[in-house]
Length: 434
Image (tube, rainbow, N blue to C red; front, side, top):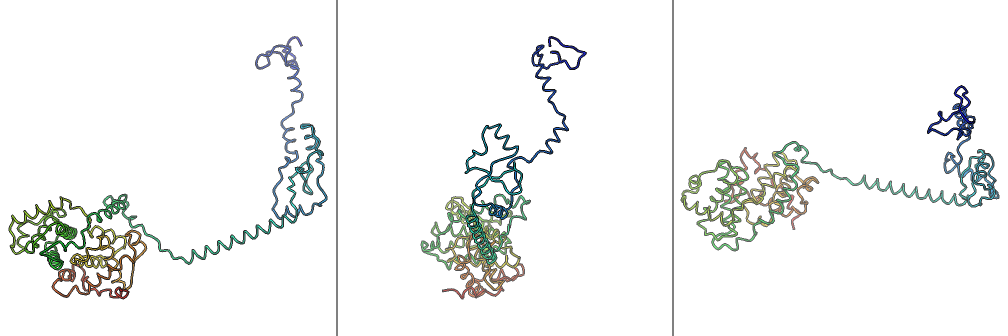
């Protein structure tokens, strides 16, 4: 057609074409396409009525597939592909279905449409039975192994660990985020500042017995002055560190004691006793100048280093791990103060002394050895590691009320300290002693 007729709808002009097609070009093909166009309902009907997609076969259980494969005769190798699917394959790929190799030839299931095929894996009945038997044996073995593991898990009685810091997560003074790092540092610091357990061998005029008398007296002075508990432990630490580094004559030993308490009070206390009070309790055996001179000598000898961890530092953390009661706390401090007096207990580090005191107190109250998994986890000492120290504490407990050194026993026989010293010693801990 040479032109376009606007009155004739059957004629399509160049102005009606997208892209500005030239007149007479592509008109015939467009008209032919419109003639072959079908309605949407017809297309939907064809789609709904179309046969299922080839190879989209619903999977069957393994037993059902084995049944079907056993029904197929062994002489039947393949069948030609028939139906519309075979015709489309022949037209599109220009091959004949009959020429397909037997190794990859699909075999249809019985009672299935001709154009619906599955892949034949050439499995025989014997191989299927063998595979099934192996699968069953493997499943039985796994089941037995799982049952055995469940029985073993039931036999193991695992005590759960408690999170002792969970209740203090909202308390900024508890420093829960840093508490583990702090005590890891304390463990390293106690090793660096540990006093040699045989330092008395270097002293010519004093011995361990004199040291015990001095510390027992200082425990009473500490109690009369109503000082903080930390002050007593730091006082003993300063005395031992000073005596291990400096020679002292016998008549100056009491001066060392009151001066060490003065230094500890300046480090720990808010209200520090005056020098005159310390001179008074020493029955005026020394004057003010002697006390200040000894303080200067002691500080220089220790190089102003007063920050070593004492047993008290570990006691507070370990009592929390043991979920202690008031009775357990008082009895534990009674045990640890008995150890402060004894020179031979310097062989144990402060953390071990604190742990053994709590273990001994728990055993004394309960009447049996008691050391929980939570305590062992946080304290890092097992029951076996504590036994030697604990047995020595029991011996000290037995003789605490006898002899001349009874200051700790008198202190803990008061109502303020819950009469902890009157508790019967845990003598059953001595039974396994070799």
